Length: 178
Image (tube, rainbow, N blue to C red; front, side, top):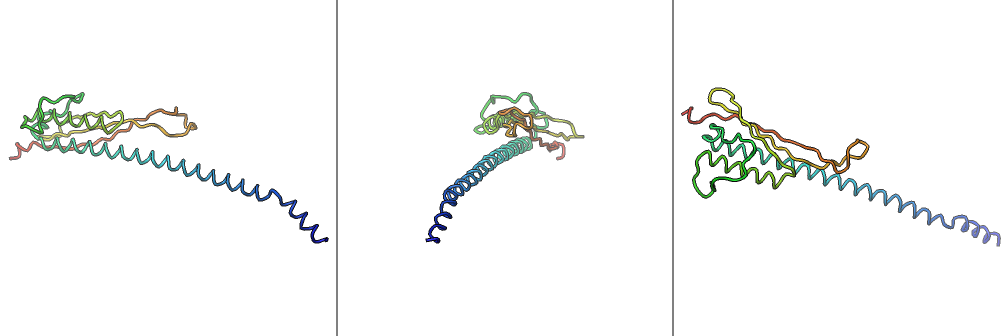
């Protein structure tokens, strides 16, 4: 009978202890899941930011390739315009165009893609003399992204930050070489 009383006392003192263990375990698991969700959201933001940077690089290099392909239009300075044109005089994909018309067509295509793939996308195209029969074209592509830093950095939630990518290439007048 003494043995039976001891087991009963041990059972009463440990009653509810298992429930407390389960609650603590659930709390720890909930914290781990919240941390994982936060990391997932941050990873998605970084991925989106990388994608926008890649798009800016592709856009800038594409326009530089178009500029280099249209050497007479580039030498004449037809690509260095501000602001970018919004309408081309003709569809240079379907018909043969002058170098000036092709430059306008290329800039319209560039501006259309810029607005479609980069939020708040803007661009500037400049040309500078780099020597005899040499010109340097510089393209700066800018866009905006939402800031996701915490409020401890004194930034307003929902604020945006502007990023830019700059690329340049020096061209020579191919007709003067021949």
